[in-house]
Amino acid sequence: MADFTEKIELIRKHLKSYPDFPKKGILFWDIFAVLQHPHVLAVLKDVLTQTAREIQPPVECVTALDARGFLFGTLLALDLEVPFVPIRKKGKLPGNVVSIVSTKEYGEDILEIQFDGIKKNQRVLIVDDLLATGGTLKAACDLIRKLGADPVACLLVIELESLKGRETIPSNVISLLKC
Image (cartoon, rainbow, N blue to C red; front, side):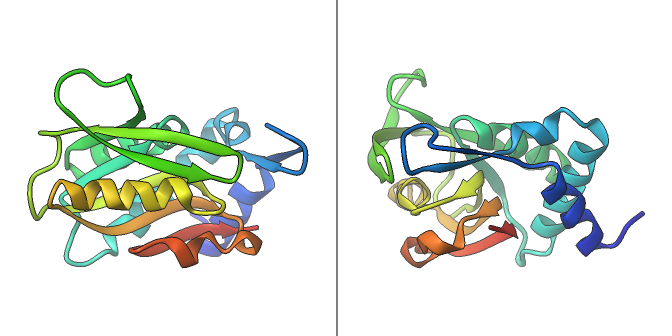
């Protein structure tokens, strides 16, 4: 099996980017291209799991952002043998929810999580595909704190360093690829 750096480069090689999507001036990095190659997806899952296992003390719950974060968050929770709790856009979750407004580079969203999904003081890992300006990820951290839990780390596949989103995140940020 390849070493960590070789695995990261294999993943990077399979990413695609699209200029001016979803609006002019945005360079959209697409993780879906990795999903077209089962071997590369398996490598990405292994790298995410290895990275998450290094967080100490261990995480007790994984949450992920709607929708691409779900692709990796569920697999990661399964590998770590901890619960998975989704963070979704407004109106997509049943039952009692906690909400927060998220501001990102091309608009606003309201994010929600089920009230009873995460326990007080639980150590939570937040997973997503990409960190840009940080608005959505910051809102996710704030949402976890509203529930009385601890967002111990945010694990991302891609970080767009030039947008400095990391600076807005009130938690440890771990990104596999920096673009």
